[in-house]
Length: 482
Image 1 (tube, rainbow, N blue to C red):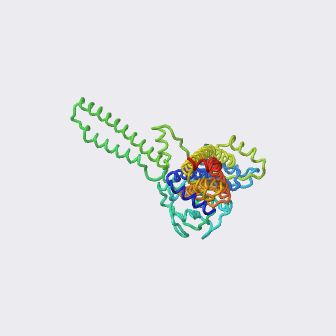
Image 2 (image 1 turned 45 degrees about the vertical axis):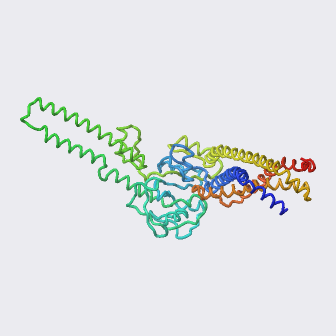
Image 3 (image 1 turned 180 degrees about the horizontal axis):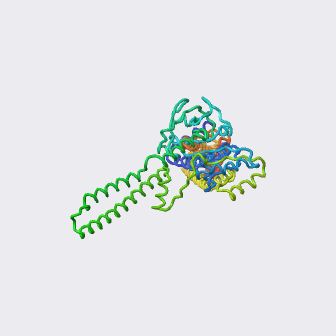
């Protein structure tokens, strides 16, 4: 057996480029299939761990899937805020067993700051690596990935920025203090900064109050400057009693035209400034929103204070009847929407499944092309080595050993392709930041990859089948007599 293996390797290394092409094609197909297996396992694991038994999510009207992604998985922008008055009606509903409020809006270095209560920590069975839970406003409990990427530790302070970008408008007047660091758990809490609801309300109430009653905005400063400029021109140019009436009229006409032109430019500049703020995720004050409406007519001014609203409410049913009546009642009778995490996640996985099935089909086509390439390669090896095989037979090698030689080459090519493909898939997976929480060493993944190894071995045997049959039926005397 060892001799057959040595001879097979020698034959394959004799034509390294052809051998490498066969292995490369096989490896590409295997890597794609392995990545698909990991992705499906990751999605299923994330679905189980992050849903955490949540029956319903109540939030602002909009996309139900966006509501689930933003409030449960924390990977999308929120649909908006919902008033506490309507939230309390849901909480008091006899079909509701428990609720957990969520308030979003800020982040620190890309990690979301989530306002909630301690029930959220219990929901995900969070364990503390260091420190304790939050108890006062501006206390913060950070996930394992947050402390790893930002370097924050117990006692450190930090500020949040508006929105979910790495940089933005910073709330410098309010500094959070780290009171606890969570152990790595493989769910969304690894990437979150958790704080009491009052923290989020405090920060945004201050911003809201400052924008309404604080210093004038940038638009007002521009307006004042333009007014001063116009007044100066009027006093210095046209306010002369000894000028002729005709000249005064001409001057007044020019001034009016100039003011109209300046006002038009001022409106354009103001609109551009407001658009710039919106594109960078910055909040508009109530006055700015009204001004934008006058110029563009696209915004709706909302007077709800931050402390009178939350982003979403996680709901747990008291009995199965709630699943039938509660979502419909909320969607039809309130300004809010109710979305089922199970339904929306199944819909998401179904949509992703179409893309994964396409990739899976492509991978199998590549593997079949690779099998065809191995078949042609081994057939050429047999045709070019027919005299060598005949000499082996004369030296005492049986037909079975000659057949084994070709089968061994087919298996070596297929298994090498499988091994390289698996290694490549793990290297790619390691560099995908969104999949850090995935089951990297999941037994289900290993089991499926071992099944893939068996399949690849079968493909290698099948590709060598016809060349092996030709070698077995080869007439030794006829070959040597040619």
